Amino acid sequence: MILKLSTEFQYPIEFSNLKKYEADFMLMNNIQYKKFLWFKITPKFVKEICTKALDILNNVNMDLNIIVEQLKLTTPQDVKDILECSDNNLQRLKHKSDEQYLVDVLSSKTIYKIQHWHKTKTEEYKDYKRFANAVRAGRRIPIKFMNDHVSIIKELFPVIITTPQTEFINWEKEYFDYAILDESSQMFLEVGLPILYLAKTKILAGDTQQMQPSRWFTTRSVNDIDEEEEDVAENAESLLDYAFDKGVFEVMLNQNYRSSSAALMSFSAKEFYNSELDVLDHEQYCEEDPIEVINVDGEWDSGTNKVEANQVIYLAMKHLNKYESMIILTFNANQRQLIEKEILEKYPLLYKAMEDEKLVVRNIENIQGDEAEIVIVSVVYDSNTNIGSTYVARQGGKHALNVAISRAKHKMIVVKSVNSKNVKSANSDDFQTFKNWLEFLNMNHTEQKKFSNKPHMKIEESFGEVDSGFERDVVDFIINNVKTEYKTKLIKQYEVGSYSIDIALVDSKNRFIFGIEVDGYAYHGGQGVDKYLSDKSRQEFLEHKGYDIYRITEIDFKLKKEKIINDISILINNKEKRLKSKF
Image (cartoon, rainbow, N blue to C red; front, side, top):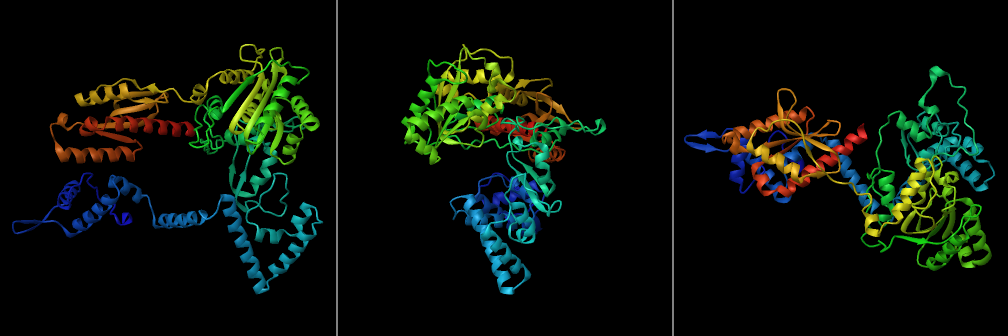
């Protein structure tokens, strides 16, 4: 029904009955009645359009003009794609996971193709038989196997999961439609480029706030680069950094799904992601005390802390049957080795859990990629530890800390022998982040939960003169009631050429966010419909030139103040986020 809505006309917002709606419709669109003698007759096409419009309004309570604007941007192919997408979603509902859905779809296509080859006795079926026999034998090394059966692999496997080190010798440039490189923030540029060469569209997934690629056992030479050919690749820490330096389009995945408690991710959200990462409590699975801190009187002894090790093992035994998965995390390798040795010699239940992969023991350098329902942390350091010589205070240490403290799904227990007041100082940003985390651990649960919330600021009134008393009322109302996450200024009678926008909101760099037009008909001499149509035309022209406009009528201002506050706050925050990602 909506698709049959005519996009050539404006539609009244208010409706009570068909006859009144038809009259308002004709007035808005400057349509004349047909006259027969002294009778006024509503044109047939108006009746048909208004009847359809009211049918829609009886089912969908919204401004039809908004729908019309979207329909103008929609093609028949768009509708077809949406319907196909809906069918696919219905099919996906039958599967327990996206992984199972993909396996079923791809395997069914592969089986169909093999059956077709078998029926037609094509050359491809002979190639497939040779390929299947080679798979069963399993004697060839991978690179030779792929080169020997490259044609059948291309036919059977449109999706290939691999590592960047795989040599795709027989695949030509841009053979694949897409290449998706996960963890590209941990990948050197030269490692990922061969895969990117094979694809038309390159998608890099990664996090610059997590661990960078390790240089401990490798040397990268850039001495052969000619000065005239010097590129940002020389200084890029990772493939993802190089992409950012080149200015590629980026999208932040700003919703955290792993943790069931907001407190588990709120430190990372604020410290590393400028509070742009959304963290929420799970309605059903949120722990009462998701972050538990146990202070012990342990001592740093050649990179180990026996008191902490014993406490961590005790906690692991205590919680072993309560959670499905567990990580014991230490802040260095020596402590990890001590705990593993103790478990191996004295705790068969924990050792069995390690064999069953229910429990893993990690140090901070190798935790990335792991997750568990509960994470038990041993910080190891005490007040006498030279923190400046530890991994967490070196360059990149804060990224390792970010990874480490974001592994828990339900609960994290931190065992430590140091606090933010007695920790030995070190001169690095990474140390400061570690100290900030220690201070965060001192907070209560409510404070931790709200830690990443952005402070809300009032809008600041800037220059310009108001055009009417009602406009002054609106300005005062916005200044006193609307709060936003970003610094925002309000400019009155914002000039954009021949027009002046009643109220403009701009960001801290004076970039236009959106404009507000006020409709106080009492202040315009009661010009009625003519004034309304003139304002609508004016707004359309402004929006065509790229100026987003929000309109406040005098009636709405009296009846819907809360809605206006909410609308303006959302518009500011959404536009600010888009401006931030763009620049």
